[in-house]
Length: 104
Image 1 (spheres, rainbow, N blue to C red):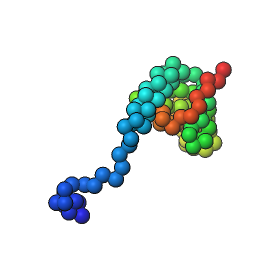
Image 2: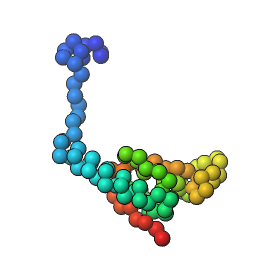
Image 3: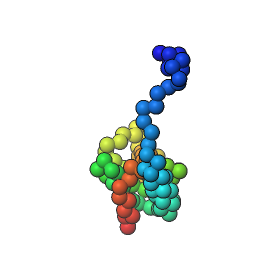
Image 4: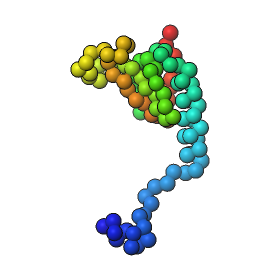
């Protein structure tokens, strides 16, 4: 089947993001990465666009992810609490974040 695609002019593109949407995602991801970097080792509450809510300590960021140490019954770790605060490091995609609240 793959050989047939290349003989007929190559693979068929199924989806391409709109250029405006793509730039908006990149801009939002950059802004959130900078903000999350300022929250390192602080307690936050995160709500995603899908309505999931997590509370935990920010333990890392990358270009597109926030890493949150959580104590959450939804996640199981057989090792207990090896990271000090949480038993699980949850990676969250920055453009999925809807609300980020700093907890005092």
